Length: 473
View 1 (cartoon, helix red, strand yellow):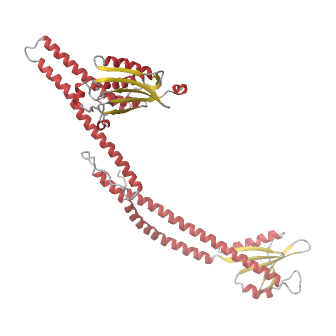
View 2: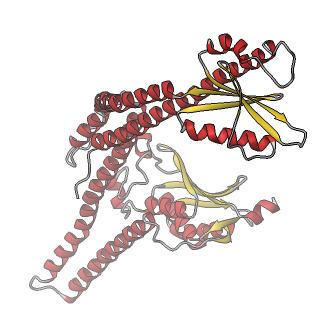
């Protein structure tokens, strides 16, 4: 199933939102129009009722009789109002039965028939029901009692209904036009908005595995797209570094493996030659075994690094005494320095409790100590410990050949050696520091290095400090 383009999806959603918004707006306008019209009609009826009520007081019958009103005297005023109204007057007989009369400006009072109620409230309800049945929704009726009189003012809804109908017709005709106009504007806006994103897509299409140096141009003109481009550029930087590292690793690994294999092949061919004595063959086999052991160790180291970088290496998380591990490594370093003009010393006051893997920590310190002995023709190797609020540290310091600033950035890379010829002569494959860094990070620690060329180096292994050690301090 093909996926829609972003511009198509945006237009579809925008069109739906536009239709909903315009329809809701028109519905709201019509509801407000109806409400305002009803309010206006009611206010008009109330004003007419007030006027009729005041006229009843002004034009009472001159005789002052309580049971009569001068309808002829009201005619000129009431008819001139231009409103439809009715006036009733209720009188109560001696037996308590009410009687209701209809008062017209043009005729004398006339008793209303078909009234079956026995109370005044029931009589009013029947009159209102009769008026409502005749109005049938086209008129609004306002009832106002005024003593013995009841005023009923009727206002027509026809003008309002005509205006409401015209508004509805206008909405039906104009709503599609407004939606089409909005769609046209939205299409241009969406197209303009997607220009930076299309530029990013075009730049991405030009990036190929053979050339990862190309980057997306920033800024793009839109902050969100610029942030996306920056993230992609950062990802490309990491991919380029990984690609470059992989290429370098492949070349270095091929070279490192080719050398022992070439030696082994040469030794085997030599052994297969004629007139080889047993001693000569034995010597060749020993050399072959030495190369096989060296190659096997290098493959094991590469496997350890790969498993460590993929978080597949088993690491303990236990409390151990770092000072004790440093002391063990110091004793082994004495043996490694035997026969060389190197003095080995250490200051490892304990206990110094760390959290991690004691065996892996020993392996890290042995790698650092082995490098210190290997790259110190004469001088000293010194062990020391220290601690901070949350970390403990074991450092290995030497007075060897040191590391130049240019080499410092790559010393933890696989197979890297500042002086390959010297490193190979000393038996190193350039994997020790890589292993040390991986094992330190797997334990939640780090390795720091400081060095001065031809003056020596200092490598410091920092590990998480034990909570018990923190409480004791």
